[in-house]
Image 1 (tube, rainbow, N blue to C red):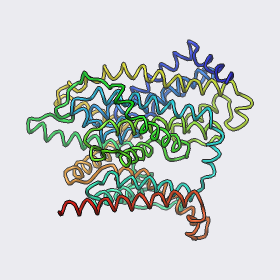
Image 2 (image 1 turned 120 degrees about the vertical axis):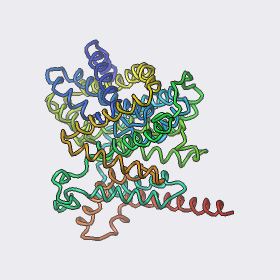
Image 3 (image 1 turned 135 degrees about the vertical axis):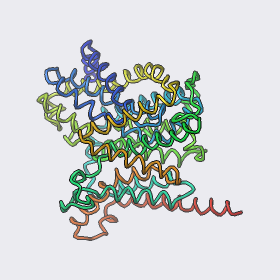
Image 4 (image 1 turned 60 degrees about the horizontal axis):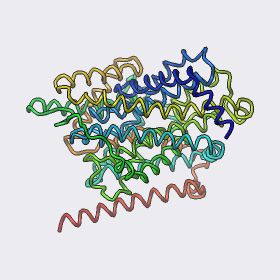
Amino acid sequence: MIDIFMGFQQAASFTALSANALGVTLGIIFGALPGLTATMGVALLIPLSFGMPPVQAFSMLLGTYCGAIYGGSISAILVGTPGTVAAAATVLEGPKLTAKGESLKALEMATYASFLGGTFSGVVLITCAPLLASAAMNFGSAEYFAVAVFALTVVGSFSSGNMVKGLAAAFAGLFISTIGIDPVSGDFRNTFGVPELFSGVALVPALVGLFAVSQVILSLEDVFKGEFGIVKYGRLSRQGLTFRELWREKINLLRSSALGTFIGIIPATGASAACFIAYGEAKRFSKTPEKFGTGTLEGIAATESSNNAVTGGALIPMMVLGVPGDVLTAILLGALMIQGLVPGPLLFAEHGAIVNGVFAAFFVSQVLMLALGLVAIRVMGKIVNVPTPILLPIVLTLCAIGSYATNNTTFDLWVMAAFGLLGYLMLKAGFPQPPLLLGIILGPIAESNFRRTLAISRNDLSVFVTSPIACTILVISLLIVLKIGWDEIRRSRSSRQ
């Protein structure tokens, strides 16, 4: 405990605080601009960290990391455009709340949920890092496949009322995820001879097109009809979040934070999967699941607490074992090596003071994110007052810039446009969009680990049963699917009567 207090002395110095505040500010800006990712923001600041002491350098980088993951919720709530992949599920509730005139309430819930989720994962980071990291490292390919299957069961939560369309969207996403190089054999597949598809479909242009461009096209219909566009009948609310409304979500926030932290510890999952899983679980445990998708604070609390909890969880395997939990922590791992620090158990023994300073800087980032976030939402919240004919070209321009900046290729603009048209057609036909995105994200994880497991077991499927962890997760997934199917049957029977 004394070491942690010494860490806070380092993280609370003027230079470390200034670096952290700069990082959080830039992170919120990068996160709020659609298409500009948290990864991009952290990567751009790596060169600036070269000559800085370790604690100051990581104060800036962790501030950017946490700020960007939170910042994605701002544009997701206000204009229906996820600023980052981590805020994809926030789009399901945010714009609906803005349309009700409750934008400030939604933004404040996102801010407090982000702070609580990040703080929860920070507590786990400093207390349970070695234990939880070693537990995650017990996961083999069979366990990773089971986790991916469990995540795909969330499809049922987004397909309420029409399971067939939800499954069709999910299978379409799984097919899209197969485009590119086979992860096991190395063969090209489903590329149709297009060189730009050899590395697969870029996630950022696909996400921006699916959730942002499709909404722009849909909003054009409303403009031609003389109605409001992206934020239909939206207005800048004056009524903020009350303590009672926040306290009402205490169990939801705790459950979602725990899910996000655990998913962050497991490599190759990330905040995008965490927010969808937490959203699905929040809907499953909710007393009013029918309100989900119509604008509810429960959904915002679940998605934003979970995706920000991933930040602390992902640092655990990186610091303890040198295994990055996602792309962002892979960049942070490089920054750690640049500072001459080798991750692993010896890092804690030989550089304990620096490690405690980094852990303390993570907590400082959460506090600064809360303070700066509450200021930012009152400034950026005024975006709902911008006339739709002016707002639409701005949103579309930001989408194009963000999509192009991913790989600096015009092909990604075509990907964005194609997914925008696909998303628009899905909305018009009543197909849910999240299952498609889930399929794209989770497809490679499920496929590569399933085939790797079969290769190791020599095509013996019993390995999924003999592994206690994998078997437990798969049984839970099956029970969830059966419950969703039973609910669908009951719903169809009641509608006939």
